[in-house]
Length: 438
Image (tube, rainbow, N blue to C red; front, side, top):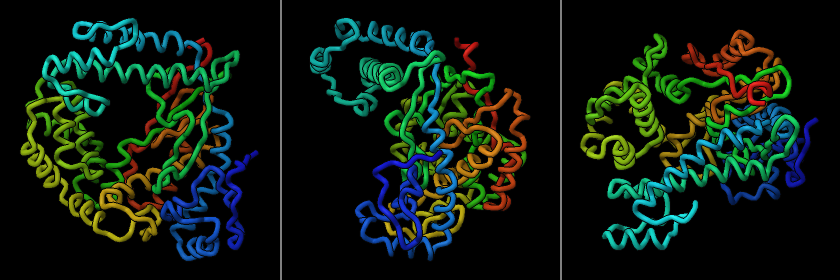
């Protein structure tokens, strides 16, 4: 049974609805209203927005339909094996100890604690700039090895705290493992993304995934979107080259990464690094990153990368996909936002880069919710992470979800005709069962 939160008791009475109809969704963000908009005294305006806009009405109906699914996901939580807190975290603890040993070559460490004053003294004595946070450590990491080591130290400490101590403190121990839960929110942003608060389960690290279990004989399968942003870009921009590449199954990120590797002198890199580089570069352009940010990202691989090199790469990329450049430029200038259900003018203020970002995030959010609803008719949907959902299935064989995928493709093509769906969904097992990790 769906349960409602007590803080969602303000109504939209004239529309015959109330906020309790959407206990897991922000109606204010769905309606693209400014953050200072007082919802409780402007019910008639909310009513008129829903009545006047087919886009908003369709988004509202979709949100209402996913409320029972989110309620079930939130109440069930995820079950993580006890072995995560021992075996799973042991490598992280060992890595932390190794990092501390390396730091001790420059600054004496006592136990697992790095004395900040000693770090500052070392930097001052060596005419190096002080670094007070991870951003500054990242900025200076090429000046001296200590910066990179301190950055790794901070990251490992944070990981152990978040995915070790906090999980135990917030979780509930059972005979099968530790149940972890969070508070779910759809439309955590204007684009409709879902997020899990209290415990950020929507950011669950891959290392933790291996230890997610279920106590009966069923297994967890991930239905994950493959190259979602680039497919959406190809569809909306009508980019001939991109659409052809998806049609024949080319690895676009690898091709882009190869182009970058040749331009910046990245030699002997493995396929994974090349592909990751291509993906980061494409996403940076997609979401409006400037030249300096792209330079900083590439300098992690090759410190000698210049802004001139990046400008050349950007030019080559847009020459390869000319429709993409025009489309992204038009998004920034448009007074409306692009959604899968049509264009709409927001009442909230959006910066050019936010307008550029919106259609990709919004389209992914809509697609994920449609997939949730279709999968929920045959299986239990147990988790959502950005562009993938997890279901409980009786077997690991991908054939058990073929009907779900086919129905989803049919539904998606009703919303976005001629969308490049070939190979869009990947099916992979998540974690194991109690016998595997028991």
